Image 1 (cartoon, helix red, strand yellow):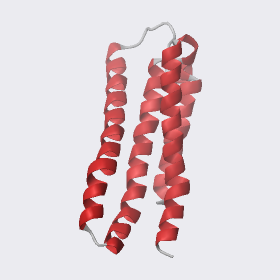
Image 2 (cartoon, rainbow, N blue to C red):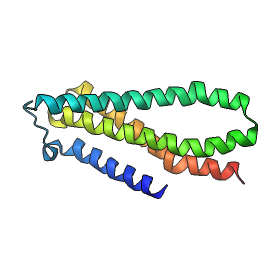
Image 3 (cartoon, helix red, strand yellow):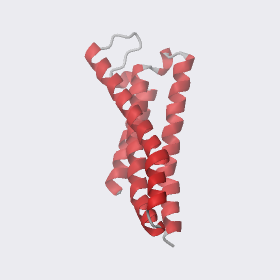
Image 4 (cartoon, helix red, strand yellow):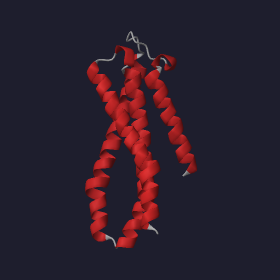
Amino acid sequence: MGWLSRFLTAVTFLAVGVIFSPESFGSKSDSHHSPKIFTYIKLAHLLCFSTAWGAAIWVTFIGGIIMFKNLPRHQFGNLQSKMFPAYFSMVGVCCAVSVASFGYLHPWKTSATTEKYQLGFLLSAFAFNLTNLFVFTPMTIEVSFS
């Protein structure tokens, strides 16, 4: 999982850079964006946000419950120990892209209060996901196999 951690770190730094210095990445506060780029960034935000949301719903309410009810306990634990790092990594990348694209589309200096709140909520979801990936998942896996 070493390469995945480095990739996620790079995407995180890119997202933070886009949020705090969108002009460095080509975002203009005066809304003179190329319509094609604007459309692709909106599409990236929508796809990544919906992928993260859909994966969370599936893992929490459908897949996890079915696996818990139908697998023996040790198989369920083994499966979860492999699935959770992949799940949190995918959601982390999706959150980072979503934060970066939202930050690019709505520069902080010219954003309305509601857009600043939306960005704050996206950033908090990203931070909680990274906490799950790097803190709680390894602790849980270690406890379940000891």
